[in-house]
Amino acid sequence: MQRVSHSLHNAWVISDGAAGNERQALALASAMQVPARVLRLPLRAPWSWFAPRMLPGGRLALAARERASFVSPWPDLAIGCGRGAALLTRLLGTLSDGACFTVQVLDPRIDPRHWDAVVAPKHDLLQGANVLSPLGSLNPVDDDWLASGREAFPEFANLPRPRVALLIGGPRRGIEFDAGLLQRLIASVRTSAAGGSVLATVSRRTPPEFAANLRAALANFPGTFWAGNGANPYPGLLGWADRIVVTPDSVNMLSEACATGVPVHTVVAAALPDKLARFHASLRKRGLLADPGETRGDVPPLRESAAIAAQLLMRITARTPA
Image (tube, rainbow, N blue to C red; front, side, top):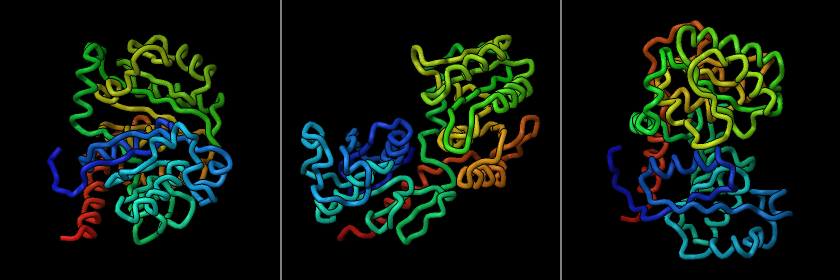
């Protein structure tokens, strides 16, 4: 990655502990090439109920142990992701007298003017002078990241091709992980991996019975099925994949799959929630998402973290006194 010139010396990545949120914030800090300190700061009730709306007490939203980390000197840059982090990045703008540039990733569900910048995917339909809208979620996937994944899991090179990575999420509002989705997913993987191998991984949200049934149905394929024990081979899966099949529920997993540059497929067993349907439609329009068996043209991978970082650095430079 090419070094860029900026006036930032340090950053806080503020997390509520959700892995997907923290991953996005860290990816952005890395793309901005700023040394980052990760602060995992869960909020207490009642502040957590209303975040990022302000309640009296400010830093009392944090328990005493976490509050000890949330003190000056304030960072040059703060990046939060998720509603809990949004309250703290909002507070930092006031506590630092505006010296800390505050960035909130994902729609904070209130007016974005409370932050210096808000990064929200296009399917959120958020608007504002300080809103940046990538197609997907921020992530670290680029050529170097994929090469590191291959180096970390060299044994996958010996598996027969096509090597199909299977990324399994979990149910969310409007998406059931039921028998219908299971059968469609099995058929998709069998079509995509015919004559090859399957590299599968579950997530924390994957129902155990769903994972067990899927594993049994794909047992005849060589490969691996990671179910939470030992080192997560996720970087190796993406690094070695010739094709990727993703369950339809996760914007993060779909974004990371589409960043690899290989064909990506998903299956849908019922109508998707509106926001997710818009995201799927945008990926298909760009040629990034296809049905099993469809061929993909020469489509650039979806890599937006560097572009968002560059836009933020321009905004920071523009407000920095000469």
